[in-house]
Length: 558
Image (cartoon, rainbow, N blue to C red; front, side, top):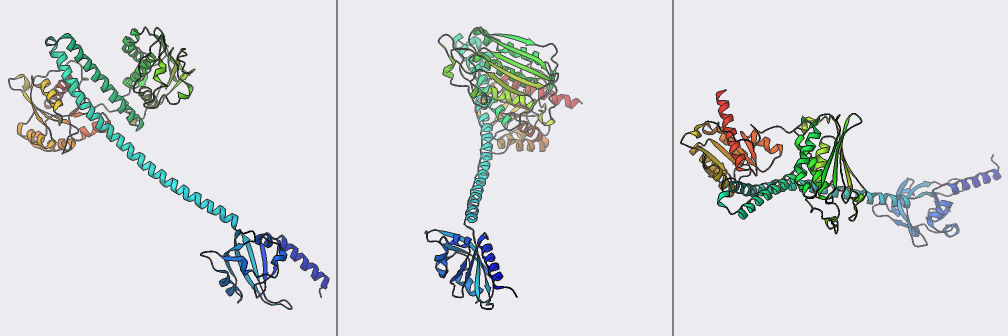
């Protein structure tokens, strides 16, 4: 038999344990009056134990929406079943806490009457954290959705930009073809008929057309670099010799301002495998930049040395106004011009004007395409002083260019601009060969007609459909097709001409404003014999036609 004192001690120990239990424990009478509540239960209800003892729990409990109600749960538990729910507890201070509640029935035992035990756990903090997490998740989901939408929009804008540049290059290069063509004709054939002042104006127009053509090509180069579509034509060449050629090209501008170039080219610099034309573009951009921001009578140092046995180090140092450190990371961005151009002048020295802000961006793209790197060092921009700038390029001696870097050689024969090739064909007879020109631009057609009419009979068509009928009607010796034609696609037109017996062997030359490899490959895939990039000179057009005729004649004999 257990001694009453021992039982009392055990019961006291149980109460102490319950008080230290980190969850609320409440014992209710069958009338839902509070018979016992432990320490954590008191904290949950937000009052003292004396106020709770004997009071009804109903007034403190508030049903939570979507959860099992307290009275419904009580009805279930009082019949001997266990139940649980989420419940809100209203506290005297006016606030509420949300708790999980588990209830089970204790039948009567000996002198003890039946009771219901509630296990209550404050979930307010957890629910608050969960609610915050849910809100964060919703925000993240919204941000992800916005990012996806932004990415889609950026891709759309990138496609729009590419399409715009393609159209803009065509719309700019097409009139440039007329400007360049007419001015070439006047310069080559009409000088004796013009006043000297008018002739100089025509020469200025011709040079302006060349400059605009260069700007358009620079914009297209930047686009190719951004889209990682800049292709190279690798060859073995001497970097030092390429740099000398570029210095010679810019010397005329430098000499006007008494700016001299000094060269330090090491004897042990090996030949380089890369794109000579593109590397010369890098040199020219750096040299013209150095001239632009240098004072009259200064020098520009150019050095090319071998570094660490496996690299080539190129350095271009000027004595100009310098570049602020904060701008070092931006100067290679497209369309970025260093500082305020008005700061490029002093009372004694006048600097050349600004440019398009594309030169350094293009240089960076070309250098990185050769697996090299380019950077600048400068003390900072000081209009009254000349701290100068040092541009550095480090190139691997073996760039290990992947095959995707290579630009296929599509041009047939010698480069345009050299000696015009003449092939003895039917054109040497009294009857002229026929040239069909399919182009919607009337000025381009007129220029071509003026250039070609002495040797060829020019037939023109403004649309693909009309050109197709003229091709069958007149059987021209050569067909010229502009790549951007209204109506029937130019490449589809070429495929149709290739599918017919009458025009299957007729040379077809595409006239394109776009120089992307994909565009050129489309020309050949459609069956084109060759292509010519706008704007072109009359000399280039005639040479391209003779080259194509020569190729056809050579193939006929083999």
